[in-house]
Amino acid sequence: MKRKILILFSLTILFLLSLVTMGYGQENVKQSCITAKCHVNFGKAKFVHGPVAVGECISCHQLLPKEDHKFQPIKNVEEQCNKCHEPMAKKGTVHAPVAKGECAKCHDSHQSDRQFQLKKSSTSDLCFSCHPKNLITKKFTHGPAADGECLSCHLPHMSEKPQLLTKASNDLCFQCHTDFQESFAAAKNIHKPAGENCAQCHNPHSADARFLLASNTPDQCYTCHAAIQTSATKSTVKHVALDEEKKCLACHSPHTANHIKQLTEEPMALCLKCHDKSLVEKGNKLSDMKTLFDKNINWHGPIRERDCSGCHEVHGSQNFRLLTQTYPPEFYTPYASEKYELCFNCHQNTLAQDPTTMTLTGFRDGSRNLHYLHVNKKVKGRTCRACHETHASNNDRHVRELVPFGQWMLPVKFEKEHNGGKCSPGCHAPFSYKRNKSETRIEKTDEE
Ligand code: HEC
Ligand code: HEC
Ligand code: HEC
Ligand code: HEC
Ligand code: HEC
Ligand code: HEC
Ligand code: HEC
Ligand code: HEC
Ligand code: HEC
Ligand code: HEC
Ligand code: HEC
Ligand code: HEC
Ligand code: HEC
Image (cartoon, rainbow, N blue to C red; front, side):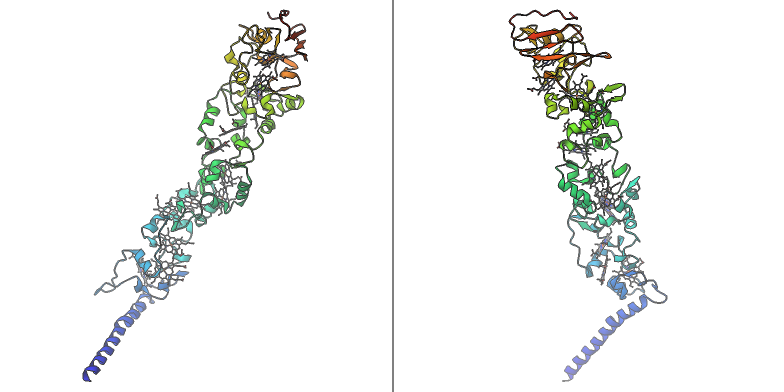
């Protein structure tokens, strides 16, 4: 009986003692932490951390035994946080300070004037406490980055996406640039890098060139299109169009297009947008191509396909008039078939090869090859332009109305006849030719 009472008594004492050491002790810490004299500012900021608000200093700070007001240094901050917060399941891209458990680099453990007890008064100040500010100090800035809205694109702790981004590449941009999302969905063709990642061309923060580009057009384009750079810069014949204000963008869209090759318009219409008048630049006088096509109904084969690029290398060329292959610039030139690679790319290179033929050309009088006669000469061979208009004419076989001869335009007056033809040009007396003659004589031309 006595024993029972003793046990009960000692238990009561122990219980009361524990109340004194634990409860009263804690009460003691609480009271002595935030007083009129000590730690006066704790709990006064706009956003106070839960445990601080209720004076639970000891949940993080432990008194060193037997020392007067000395606390154990907090070696592992994250461990502290994890006592109350669900530990972060770190996966994907983890922000370096988070990976290292440096929660207190961004969060004040006690309080601050920003939500989540963030240490700086603005998000960007927080970010720039570790990252270089020159991210947003280039000449042209992006709205949200310049406004310090870093978190409209980045997550602070970790992300499934690279670079801590909130969304994958283009979806990120489409959040705000909804017009782009619509035009991308509707477009027939999307420029490959634009379909993949806008940030390949645009800096999301700031840049030295307009529209947040790392460099101006065409330099930006050249970083990926080296072959075009070679044509444009190393060629001897340049297309003035590339040097005009819009540069490449006079013809191409960097984002989406409804035509092949990112062209802003149907290819032939595109050329005629500028070549709809005679152009005079750099000593060149070029015909009004639009009028030429409107007035001449018999278009050359490739042009019927509306393909100017079959003969012209628009970005620059080593050949006269931006031609893809050789073609003599002169009216007269000693004959060599290599000089006509352009025409012979599609036509038989034998048409002016032999003095007599029954097969190589239809331009013959009996067996006498009239192409040979006019073109294949050691000194003053006539070039094709003497008789043919390469783009379009109203005559059969693209024979031209007028021959450009110096400042003059000599009329050709070509007439197609049954099994032959007739011309009464300014160069010589009227002639006609018949293919079905067996043996023929033709008067000497003025030249021979
Ligand atoms: C959530 C955890 C946590 C709580 C709760 C907490 N602290 Fe702290 N405290 C820290 C951390 C982390 C540091 C940084 C020092 C370190 O690494 O040891 C710190 C540092 C301090 C310092 C050193 C000077 C300074 O401000 O950096 C004082 C003083 C301090 N705390 C007082 C208090 C008081 C008083 C309370 C209760 C009102 C309190 N702390 C509650 C985590 C906490
Ligand atoms: C003793 C428990 C405890 C510890 C330790 C602790 N917290 Fe907290 N924390 C809380 C409580 C309680 C809240 C308030 C919860 C609420 O308001 O929903 C809170 C709120 C927060 C908030 C604001 C959350 C919100 O949604 O508003 C942040 C941020 C935070 N804690 C970060 C930390 C960090 C960082 C650490 C480690 C340095 C830490 N906490 C340690 C208990 C703790
Ligand atoms: C690089 C700075 C940075 C670091 C380091 C950091 N945070 Fe945060 N944290 C933030 C920012 C910024 C927010 C506010 C997010 C928002 O506005 O949506 C935040 C929000 C929070 C929140 C409240 C919102 C939420 O996501 O639940 C908690 C809790 C939190 N952090 C805990 C932690 C913990 C724990 C650590 C350490 C493991 C940590 N943070 C490390 C910057 C940081
Ligand atoms: C405490 C310092 C610190 C703060 C504050 C900080 N960062 Fe970082 N951040 C780092 C470090 C360190 C790296 C890793 C740098 C490296 O690898 O070159 C990093 C990397 C990054 C990366 C690249 C992530 C990757 O792995 O691809 C992004 C994006 C980033 N931080 C954004 C932010 C943003 C946004 C903020 C503000 C909300 C911010 N940081 C605040 C230290 C910080
Ligand atoms: C419009 C969305 C957007 C905003 C707003 C934004 N960023 Fe970024 N940030 C990105 C993208 C996209 C990348 C990846 C860039 C890349 O792939 O080249 C990136 C990359 C980064 C990087 C790592 C690579 C680097 O360029 O050093 C850091 C650091 C960074 N951002 C910090 C910030 C900071 C700080 C802010 C706020 C001042 C901010 N970002 C605002 C979209 C954004
Ligand atoms: C949070 C919304 C937001 C996001 C996300 C966003 N932008 Fe923007 N962007 C803007 C705002 C706002 C402007 C300024 C609009 C203006 O001045 O007309 C802008 C302007 C631009 C401009 C410059 C326009 C000009 O006229 O100079 C470009 C280029 C651009 N953004 C590209 C991007 C790219 C690329 C991304 C994705 C990495 C992106 N934006 C993501 C809001 C956003
Ligand atoms: C191949 C490089 C490239 C890519 C990739 C690219 N852009 Fe552009 N972007 C440009 C160029 C060049 C301009 C300037 C256009 C001009 O001068 O008319 C521009 C202009 C802009 C503009 C401002 C002018 C306008 O049309 O409103 C915005 C906004 C823009 N881009 C958003 C985007 C978005 C969003 C993406 C991704 C879906 C993207 N860009 C992908 C090169 C690119
Ligand atoms: C980041 C690299 C990059 C930049 C910068 C870039 N491009 Fe491209 N471009 C590509 C890739 C990749 C393709 C697809 C090539 C392929 O499919 O063979 C392409 C294709 C093209 C095509 C052909 C499209 C087709 O249908 O075949 C054109 C035209 C073009 N780019 C023009 C431009 C112009 C103009 C610029 C500058 C405003 C530019 N590009 C800047 C990467 C780039
Ligand atoms: C006068 C209009 C015009 C201009 C200006 C122009 N291009 Fe083109 N580009 C075209 C046409 C037409 C094609 C398609 C014909 C072809 O395949 O050769 C083309 C094709 C391309 C291709 C695709 C080539 C291939 O092999 O598929 C690229 C890349 C390209 N251009 C880049 C550029 C760049 C970069 C610039 C600026 C330096 C530029 N272009 C300026 C008209 C133009
Ligand atoms: C943006 C306006 C523009 C567009 C579009 C354009 N050009 Fe040009 N082009 C010019 C100018 C300007 C000249 C120089 C005129 C001069 O030298 O008198 C020129 C010159 C030429 C020349 C003669 C080059 C020389 O120096 O001998 C040819 C051939 C030519 N362009 C073909 C084309 C073809 C084919 C297209 C369509 C793919 C095209 N152009 C689209 C503006 C343009
Ligand atoms: C079958 C090849 C071929 C095709 C296809 C072709 N061209 Fe030409 N182009 C030439 C030749 C050859 C010349 C040089 C003509 C001359 O000097 O006799 C030339 C010259 C030009 C010139 C300079 C005109 C002048 O007055 O000197 C322009 C402009 C031109 N072409 C534009 C175009 C356009 C636009 C197209 C498409 C609608 C086109 N070309 C299609 C072969 C072609
Ligand atoms: C890209 C291919 C191509 C090139 C280059 C080309 N042509 Fe043609 N040419 C054609 C096609 C296709 C026809 C139409 C044939 C048909 O209708 O059966 C044609 C028809 C002709 C005709 C009319 C012949 C006929 O059968 O109706 C003449 C003349 C002609 N070309 C001259 C030239 C001259 C001169 C050159 C060089 C300046 C040239 N061509 C360059 C493709 C080409
Ligand atoms: C003296 C004028 C003249 C010259 C120069 C000339 N042609 Fe012809 N060419 C003609 C005539 C006329 C015809 C029509 C023959 C017929 O079908 O009656 C013709 C027909 C053609 C044909 C149709 C196929 C054929 O041989 O009958 C081609 C292709 C052709 N020429 C290409 C050329 C080329 C390429 C050159 C320059 C190397 C050239 N021509 C120079 C007058 C000329």
